[in-house]
Every structure is written in C-alpha cells, then in structure tokens.
Image (cartoon, rainbow, N blue to C red; front, side, top):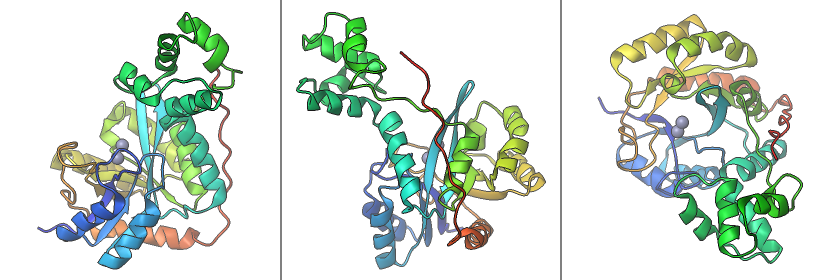
Amino acid sequence: MLNYIDLHTHSTASDGIYAPAELLQRAKDIGLRIVALTDHDSTGGLQEAVQEAGKLDIDLIPGIEINTDVAGGEVHVLGYFLEYERPAFQDVLKVLRDARVRRGQRMVELLNEQGIAVSWERVREIARGSVGRPHVARALMEAGYVQSIGEAFDKYIGKGCYAYVPRYKLTPVDAVHFIASANGLPVIAHPLELPGLEELRNWLPELCDAGMVGLETYYGPYTDEEVQVLRALAETYHLISTGGSDFHGPGIHPTPLGGRHVPFEAVERLKAGAAKRHGKTPPSFELPPPVEEK
Ligand SMILES: [Zn+2]
Ligand SMILES: [Zn+2]
C-alpha cells in the first residue's frame, strides 16, 4: 500500500537534516499528499514549508512538537493546524527556545556582547552533547576569565548575572494549553516512549480534561499489537489516532519519510477540530515561572 500521509516530520528548523523545501520535495518524490511539519519548539520552518507545499500541490499542516518534563523522563506533545503567526504564541516560543533549545548559545551571545571572548564552537566541543551551564563555565575558565567553575557562576552565568538565561520546565498539561493558545490541536507524541503505558493510562484523564485531542497511535516503528493497544485507548478517551514517521533524515530514526501508514480519518478529524477553533480568540497562555536555580 502506498502511503500518502505523514503527520510527524522534522526539518533544519530543529534537528532535521533537510531544509523545509527539500523535505517537501522528497515528500513529493515518494508520493505524499499530506505532510505535517512538526519541528521541536519551533515554527521557523513553516513559512518556507507552506510556500513549497503550494508549489508542489501538497497539503501542508502547520505543526510543532513541544518537549515537556515529567518525573523520570520527557513527554512530547504535537500541535496541529496551529495559527502559528499569533504574536502571543511566538513570544512564548521565543522565550522557550532561548531558554531551552538555545540556552547555551544564548549565554555565549550575552557574554560576547559584554566583550567576553568565549566561542560557541568551543563550548560545544567541551560539552560533546547537550550544552549546560558547566560547559560554558569551563570555557570561561579555559579562556582565563575565571579561576574556577564556581567563580564563573558567581560572576557571569549564575542567577542575577548578566549572562544568566533562566530555565523553564513545561508539564504536558502546560504544552496542551500552550498549543491551544494558537488554536492548535494537541496530540501526545509517540505515547509508548513515555515513562510507560501504565503512566499514560494514569495521565490520560487529566490530559483529556486539559484539552488533549489525539494520540500518536500509528507511530514509526510501533508493531501491530502496540497500535491495537493504543487505538483501543484512544477510542476509550475519544481521542483521534494520528501517526507519522518522525523523520529527521536518512538513518536517524528507523522509519523513512512516509514509511508509516496513517489513515485519512486522522486528517479529517483534525481538520474538523481545527475548523471549530480557527478564527476564534484562543485561550491565553501564561508561561509558568522559570525553575529556581542558583
Ligand atoms: Zn518526539
Ligand atoms: Zn519528533
């Protein structure tokens, strides 16, 4: 069976390999007709994607994937049919992106603005993975600005210092509310990657109360048995069963672009939900205060 829908893809606007236009060209080449671009914490690729999709006669669904923190792990929440240009939504997104995705980079920018010569490349080399404040501190030490990690925190990157960038934590419920603030439809991404199916069962009532509308049932590598369990759960809670490949680029995830069959019903139901919301004043969203740290 030839697939023509993929509701979970990433571009260079987050950690994907292909620029949005290139991603869509590839989608076209393999016969996809409906594609959602769902970059992590960013809608930066959507304008290009919408334009390219128009040229290629692909139905582009503007989406996002928001990372949230729970005890023992992370839960990702997808948002579909976002009115992503809403200024209030973009303002929050920028704060989140600076504070989470670009936190290390933002600290280096602030240091550079004050004439402190540490480079982002060097900080990344030191970190060899996700960048945290200790890596920036080590770069400051290496460059001779401070004698110790502690001094770097006291002088430059600790709370209250000019290169301090606060850290925010969102709960899955926060993410649901945030997506609703752009009239989008929130869906739990890859539900079996959560701290567990039991946890999911425990959380579903609260998440549904908050406004969750879907469950990513047809996810990349899930087996038929897993899909069946999730479909039953989705039906119990009247959630839309969505799906997609979670494509980032060749060889990064096991499933290729368009490599998962997603029923058209998922798109129909999402569209119907979006039609009810769009054009209306969305509920406002207030970012919870940053996490307390030194
Ligand atoms: Zn994810
Ligand atoms: Zn993803």
